[in-house]
Length: 262
Image 1 (tube, rainbow, N blue to C red):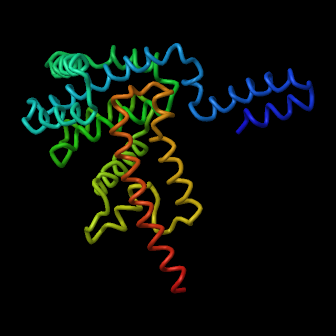
Image 2: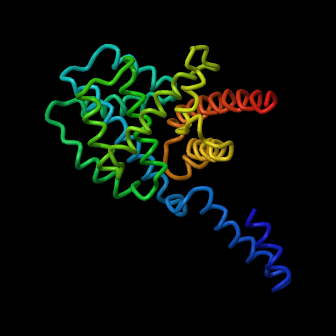
C-alpha cells in the first residue's frame, strides 16, 4: 500500500523521478510493516533460519528427555513432525542429530538460547513460534508432565515471557489443537474456541476480531519466512492458522445467531 502512496506523492513533488524514489521508500515501509525490524535485512535471513531450526530441534530433544527418558511417542511425534515439514534427507539427518544432542543428559540449553536471542531475539514472532513448536512437541502424548512444563517455563522466561503470559499462550495452543483437522464436535467446542483466540465470552466482537487478526498475522507464512522461520517449518504454522480460523468461524457463527435472535 505504502509503495503506491509513495509513488503518487513522489510524482506530485518531484515528477517522474519522484515516482521511483517514492516507490522505493514505500516498499521499505511496506516491508517493515509486514516483516517487522527482523525482516529488514534479507541477507541475514539464512542465518536466522539456521539458528531457528537448530534451537527448535535441540530444545525438542531436551524437552523429550525432561522426564528422564525419551518415550516412543515423543520419537514418533518428531518423526511425524519432520515428515509434515517435508524435510530433505540432508536436513532430516541434521534435525535428528540436533534432537539427540539436546536429549543428552548433560546438555546445557543456555548457550544455544543465547545464540537464538542474539540472532532472532528482536522478533517477537520468532520467539512465539519457537514456543509454539515446543508446546506442540510437549503435548504429543496428550499432556505436559511437571518436568516438561518446568523446562518450558525456563525457555519462556529466557524469551521474555512472564509466567502468566506463557500460561496464556500454552492454553491458547492447547485449545487451538482441539480444532485440528476441522470443526471440533466436543460439547465444549465454543468454550475451546474462545480460549484458542485468547479471549472470553465477555469480549466484544471488535476485541475478538482483533485477537483473530493478530493470530493470523503471527502465523502468516510470508511474514514468518521473512523473519527467519525456515520454509520447511512453515507447515506447522499453516496448520495452526487453520485451527485459529476454524475457532473464529465457530465463534462468529454463534454470535451471528445470537444477534439475529435478539
